[in-house]
Amino acid sequence: MHKLFASVLFLILFSANAQRVDLQLGAALPSGDFGNNDLSKNENAFATNGYTLGLQADYPVYKNMGIVAKLNYSTFGFNESSYQTQFNKQLPPGTSAIVESNDGYSCTSALAGGFMTLGKKKLTLDIRLMTGFLTLTNSGLSYTTSYAGQEYKQRNFSETDAAIAFGWGLTTRYVFTNRLYLSLNLDNVYANTNFRKNEYQSSSEETVSKPYQTYLMSIGLGYDLQ
Image 1 (tube, rainbow, N blue to C red):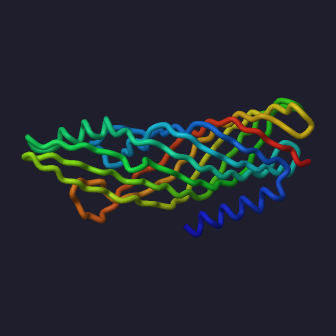
Image 2 (cartoon, rainbow, N blue to C red):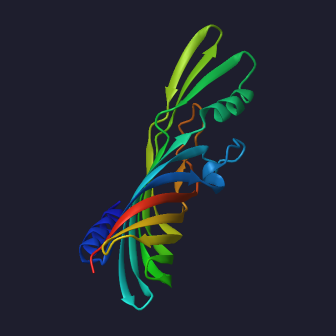
Image 3 (cartoon, rainbow, N blue to C red):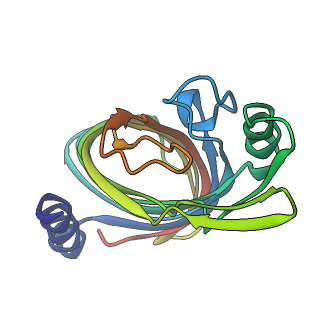
């Protein structure tokens, strides 16, 4: 956690000295194992589409190259219906369960790296590579199991893991006044996060890799401080 806080602090300080600052809002789209809905693999997280809020700061250092820092907060849902259908197929005859997510997933990421700008004047394209840290929170699941006319309730509590993150991104920027511009942004972020096995009625502390990978698609409004 302290690494993420240090990254956020760096981003805040960097933003204060940046030449461009961009506030972004858009969709968070899980990919890879993070968005996979196959219960047979422990790595799969059943995440569904959510939203992201981002702050990006750029500091050009030489012609068309510069330094970029980016902070994002993203949330995702959980595919309860797919998980519940597959989970019930594993239960003994005469037993059924209702599965509910406590609140899906949430992620805070702080990345920094370099960028290269293509184009001139009003319309440009930035290509960036970044690394940093993120924290991913899994809110856990609640089970209501029915057997022989009785109901049993169990809740898995939330877990949070911090990991090194890597990302690449594209930004198309259109300048419409001397200071203001609109941006269209695409980011791909990956981290090898780990959580306890999500085993029903199990107290096992064994952890498994549940890699975080997502595409963040957003529109932004930016201000040029130069």
